Length: 116
Image 1: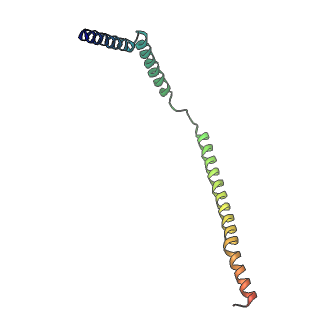
Image 2 (image 1 turned 135 degrees about the vertical axis):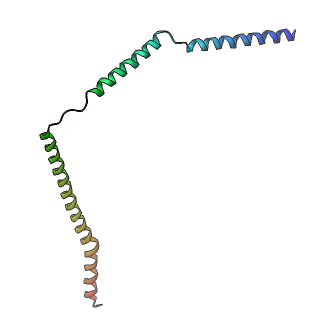
Image 3 (image 1 turned 180 degrees about the horizontal axis):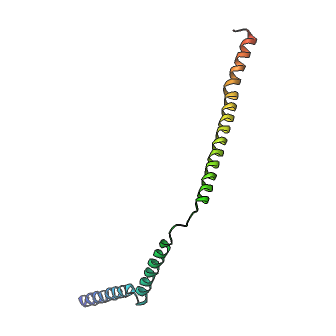
C-alpha cells in the first residue's frame, strides 16, 4: 500500500516537472513576427548608419577658417593676459601681507625696543 502511494506521488511529481519544462520551453519560443521585426530593425539601422556617414563633413570656407583662427588667438591672448594679471595681484597681495608686512612689523618692533 505504501509502495503504491509512493509510486503514484512520484509519477505525479514527474508529470508536473515535465509540464513545467514544456511550459518553460514554450515560453521561449518566439512568434514569427519577432525575428522579422528584429531583422527589419537591423536593416533600418544599417541603412541609416551608412546614409549618415556618407554625408561627410561640412565645407568650411577659407574666410571662415581664418576668422575662427583669429578668434581662437584673441581668446588665448586674453586668457593669458588675465592669468598674468591675476598672478601679479596674488603675488603682490601674498608677498605684501605674508612676507613684507611681518618683516616690516618685526623690524619696527626691534627698532622701537632698541634691540638692533
